[in-house]
Image 1 (cartoon, helix red, strand yellow):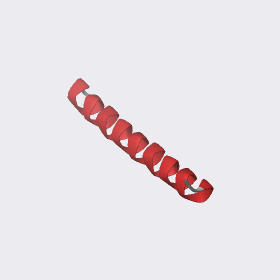
Image 2 (cartoon, rainbow, N blue to C red):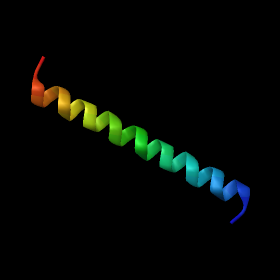
Image 3 (cartoon, rainbow, N blue to C red):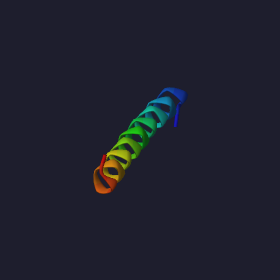
Length: 34
């Protein structure tokens, strides 16, 4: 695996992790209410 590929993989993983954490925060906010 070359460096460019691993950097791209890391970028995608970070993107997925961010999306998941944002979704979890939204779900938590909706379940607890304002």
